[in-house]
Image (cartoon, rainbow, N blue to C red; front, side):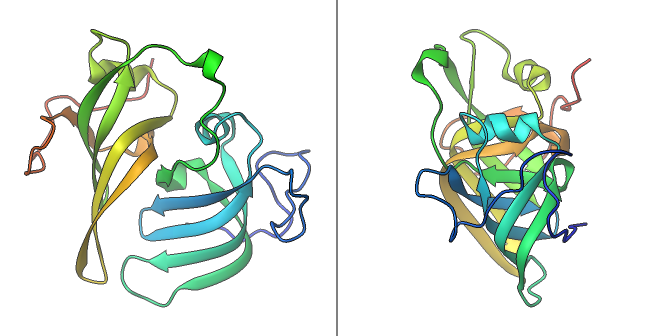
Length: 200
């Protein structure tokens, strides 16, 4: 469940994040769009890392401001001034903000994957080391894993949605299963060959 906590942030002792309408133009304020088990969250947050993926992996909870919560069951949307959301409540986050420093990037091989996550069916390119097994590689990553060229299917208020996003970040720990698929495959897989489990 989502928790509304005024003045509470991602870790004890951290400086509270200001709202976007009062921060300096140089502050690292980014849009935060996340898919949870029963809702979609739209808000703003302060980026305290090179990339949103890094920040999501560095903290177990995130401070959001100017929040809208849209329920998947079609109920009335909820507006909040601020909200703290835990990482384990999130399934997918839209990757916004900078891509990170170029010198930290490595040569990778894109592999098209299908991921079942609660009410969401996700497809996108996982970028792993050339020749590596993508399922094993995802298993060994930190919890939040980026996918590019992503497609998300879900149902909201009884209506099917099928959206595409350049880059998303999935919570590996919320994946029911993951499976390599052919690019352009029309049908979503009916099940996995191997389950995704936390790394040893």
